View 1 (tube, rainbow, N blue to C red):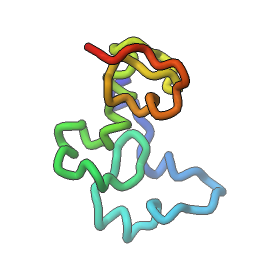
View 2: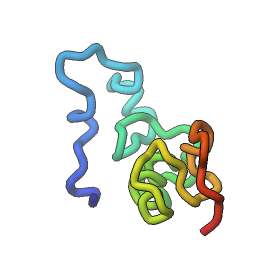
View 3: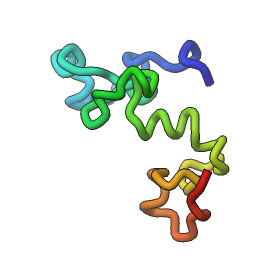
Length: 96
């Protein structure tokens, strides 16, 4: 899925739902927003451009997870840093 087909941050906000703090205009203007989920990027700010303007985890699931051997985001892929390793009871062995 390319960046041009992604939903915009405003589309991610969800009509009729109570806005989260990260959807507040002041928060959005003050920080870097992830183009995949629309939330502010805090921890990986230094790599914001390298990760295609996303959180590391969003980047991983968008571009690496399927390639590394798992189509299901709840099943750990071969990437040793895959976020799903924290809750997958039978993760595949790490390694590229």
